[in-house]
Length: 234
Image (cartoon, rainbow, N blue to C red; front, side, top):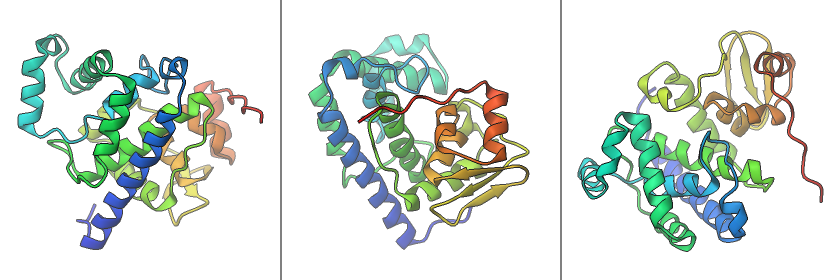
């Protein structure tokens, strides 16, 4: 992927700030039982996902300091182990109100984690917001521009180490066409729908198929054994 222009970088961070603000607004209105509700991330509740979203500005020194303060993280080495353990720690020792405050505090502070780019920060803000909202049946808009930028990054890196944090879905042999953005990738039976839903599918969320159509979406539902989630009434 080519380097982003200054204008694109500004738009990226504006997308991060927008998503953080609206995710914090959603979290602020949750009842205690909703914080304990399972998220789209296997083994994580809404609280775990929200806690993870407070950890998007960790430089190498920050990471080493965090591990030093919480040595039990050494029990689960590796990228995925570190991600899970750090969220477990924050979720266990931080109040819901403080988690919301920390997410809001990230608005306008344009830093990203060590070893990744701001595009990974954008992806986390977008995708993890849906990990919270979708299973709760709550609306949380994904704007097409930032979603397309994140989807391009995830598509281009789908076979790199960056993709190891996601569940790998069998997406080869399908084409993906966004209905709300100029975004088309792949070849084969079409999977059609909002680019935000395509982003969720690329990042290993079969629940995105509820918002996607076309012969490719039908084939993927059958292949994955996915059943549509009933839509909430009202």
